[in-house]
Each structure stands twice: as structure tokens, then as C-alpha cells.
Length: 373
Image (cartoon, rainbow, N blue to C red; front, side, top):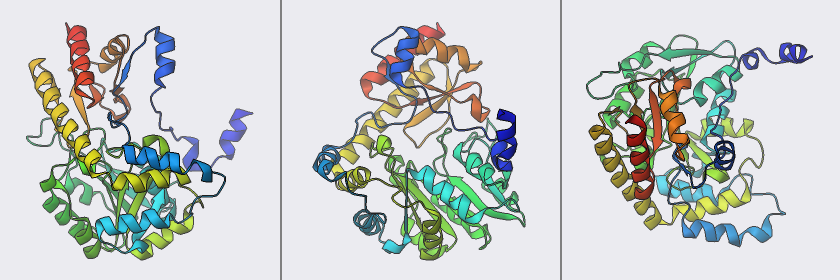
């Protein structure tokens, strides 16, 4: 019977491998017989949500019997003000993953192809294959590239565009590698993308980037009408459990995305928390400062352990174990330290490690030192 149902599924779904999140901490502790574990696997903000966001959540409890604002009007106006764009440019999603899927549903068919880089975010191939489109995977920079190993190669991405291409996905920084492109490189690349190809610039980790590396969002949107920029409240704003993200694009593209968007796809509590989080500037500063301190500490520690790691502008570091990383991952698990293996990205020797609090970072380094010894 299961074979029958498989044959009934859409062609793109039949061989689709779903995204596999890590197991809940409680389940791992029960399985392994451990306690007091730390989770450094999902690139979450270790500070948690801001006090203003938490208060906003409490304040809207009494309204949860109402449907949310389907257009997220207040949040849309606030984000439009933040980026100095027209509110008509906004599309909201149940996380930025949702916006990526909306792009695929709106612009891709089995007759079309989409381009993304080798080692790029796992959701890109999922949304492309789900609609039956073809993936043109561009080779990334070589592992020993002098400045950006395993990073996006702009020339390779452009060369992967063909007459059937309708979407190109560009992650900046990219997960799981943490690698990025300079603003001038992004502009030069967008100049070379045909006007009939939707360019998706995924900026999930934007707030963690050095200021000099952050692209000028207003200018890019004004210059490139085929551009969609995605962002999220799951990372620096620490609202991952509420699932809310957004897209910024030309109003005509936003209109098309909103046509395929499910009504009420972002909930009332998420909208309220995101609106409050945008105004908690001190929480943002503390989160970025903690990440910078933790990144410097971990990179120095990995160097002392003789481990290579990829350059990163995210809140995580991918570390080369110089061997199959699976046994190291398991050994860390048994010491109550949960990181992320990335063999599914064809990076079997790497572990991706979220930058935590300094206490968590020290515990990670101690556990890793013990395991490698």
C-alpha cells in the first residue's frame, strides 16, 4: 500500500529527502542517560528573546482566540520603516524558509531550473525539488581557497544559469559554511543575472555581519527589480520557536508571493514579539557583542587544538575534525554537548558549532579537548 501512495505523489516529492532537525534535548538526554546538556546545534541565540518581546507575548495572551492580522500590517510598517522601503515590498512567512518556498511555488515549474551553490542551505534543494524543477548546483570554492574555502563562487553561480533558469538562491552568509561575499561582489553578481531570473539574497544572519560587509538593502531593492531579500527573526532576535520571517522585493513580486501565501501564515504572538524585538536595540547589541567575543574565543581554541575551521559571519563555526566527524559528534553527545554534523551537506569531516555563552563555549572546548585526546 505504501508503494501505491508513493506512486500517487507528485514526481518532485517522490524522492524528496526532508529536512531533518536535531532531536529535542530532552529526548537525547533520556536516550543517553545524561543531564545538564547544552545545545549548540541549531544556531539559536543563547541569550534568548528580549525582555520587550517576552512582555509583548504576555500582553497578547488574551487575544489568541482571534485570528492574527493576515497581512501583519503593524509589523510590515515597522520593517518598511527600518529598511526605508514601501510596505508593499513585504511578504511574511512562517520563518524565512516559508518565503523561500513561496518563491519556488510562484516562479518554478518542472520546465524550469534554479541555481544555488554547492554546500548551500539545505532548504534550497528541498523547495526546488518539491515543485519538480531542476537544480543547477554551482561548484563552490575549493576547500583550500585562500580566503573563502567552500564559499559561493560568483562566476560559477552565473555560469550555472541557463535558458530555463527562473530563480537563483544566494546565501550571505551561508549556512552551514558561514562564508560570505563582499557587498561589491554581490552588486557585480546581480549586474550579471538576467532580468527574467529571480535573485534571492538570503540574509538570515545579516545582523551578525561586520557593518562594512552588510549590503545596502534599500539601494539593492531600488536597483534590481528581480531581487528578493529574505530575513528572519529566528537568529539574532531569538524568536526561532515562533517561526516568523519576511521577504523584501519589488511590489509586483511581493504581490505574486502573497497570492500563494497561506492566509494567517504568521501567528498573532509571533507578530507581536517580532514587533517588540525590533525596538529592543540593547538586546541586539548584547547579542552581537556576545557572538563576537565567543567567535574569537572559539577560533583561538580551535587553533590551539590544531583544528581548521571555515571563516564565518554567522553565529556558528564549521570545524574540520580532519577525520570522519561522526564519532567525535557521538563522543561530544555523551558529554552533554550537542553540535551539528553536516555530512548531509557532503561535508563529512565537519561539525557545525553554534557560538554560545562564554560558559557554554568553554564547556564545548573542554569536551572537545577531552574527546580529541
